[in-house]
Length: 446
Image 1: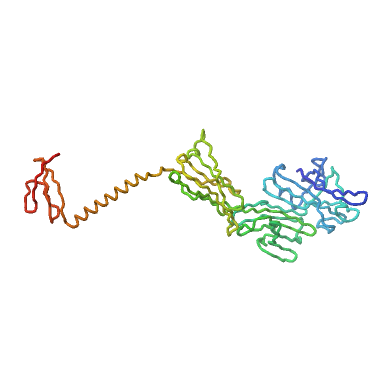
Image 2: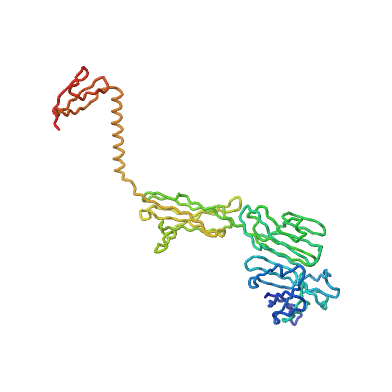
């Protein structure tokens, strides 16, 4: 596996001043046994011997092109301790290694131990680290390894999230100190710590029963906006230490609504304010767009006119909600016109929490304004009809004179009977004569 080896060179000028420079060197990470030939003899080779913990098993059958490998010297600050399994005449050179999957499947960090001869000064620091030749092969063993399968976590609000972290040491019953802390906007917040040699524990979120098996995963019971940031999982076995960074992003999708229904009916020339609102989203950035197009253009693929984006859009100020989310609205003033009748207006909201934008639409219906003369005529007729009905009901109620017309088919004459002080009586026949009806004859002119 190709790697980048971060080495240091020390330059001393004519005045004896020392200048330490970082040097990026190509190298190879190779798994095998002691004495195996280097795959690339022209590069620095870190030959990782079969041992526990097994680095190759943690990497798995992943294509090497998908893994970024970085190796650098590890400084123990001139502390020399005999590491378990180390021979009496050996001196340890330490190298930190980080393997990162390009698609975010895992991140692995660890410490490699390279047995070597002691340096002349007996101390390991930048000035007297043993030089490594370009074609040199370094036999190493894994002293410590850490792995996370959740290097980047994305969550909405109100969820339980587990930040995965596991570790392994190359010897039994090590004096291990583990810790979790959060970094956000330059501030550090301690979450959990535990030391096996003292049994002292602070914080919560890690199951102690799982620590014996190397499971240091941290659980957030209920995600909030304040939980966003970088979480650091740390393991220390003096004088070595290793960390893993796990990012937690809080993304809450907006709730989108518009202030009108699916159909908006207006009269020609009428003006109304149309509002599109996005509520309770996080993080801050959100994008609005209003478009106008024909209702059929969404289904018509060939020859359909392109939607026209509206330019007279205004934005409200951001609203900060109690849960640290945001709300924002985009609005415009719509003046109804007959040429826009039947057009569809669509509000599109984009946010990083959405795979596809949210769209809300309505159709504008524009009606001609009613004529004032027509309205006046109709109202006058209604008033007249109500008056006539009032008069008729009054006469019927009081029992006054009523006129009854009787068409006589046989004599082509009209006989009019006056009915007085009684209610309606059938006087439609000329043969009907009694004391209550008085007949008068009038020639029929039509």
